[in-house]
Image (cartoon, rainbow, N blue to C red):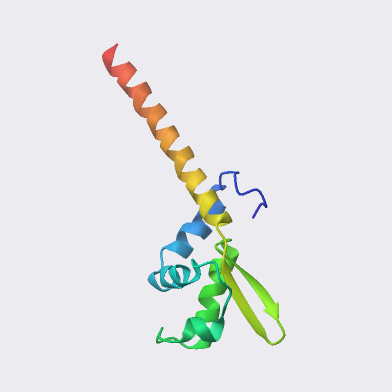
Amino acid sequence: MSADPARPLLPEEAVTVFAALGDPTRLELLSRLQDGQAHAIVDLTDGSGLTRQAVTKHLQVLERARLVTSQREGRKTHYVFDGAGLNQARSYLEMASAQWDQAIERLRLFVED
């Protein structure tokens, strides 16, 4: 994905972000990461009922969607919330909303004529 968080997502990029957000486990992981601290996989696994491998796979999906970033420190990988993907998703939804507003306005003008 592009490095510009202000740029709206392309449709194929939007699918990646919204698919990542559409899973309850990944939403739970994101909520645990929103404290701004770096968390090791073992910390994110505790109390989740998931294996480290399952948590790692979910974190990789979130990283591809630019919702988290990883930082390698020795043998451990730490994950941190990254709002870039979320900001792009917001821009995408705002763009789609504006397009619908314009379509509704065109329809209103057509019906009134």
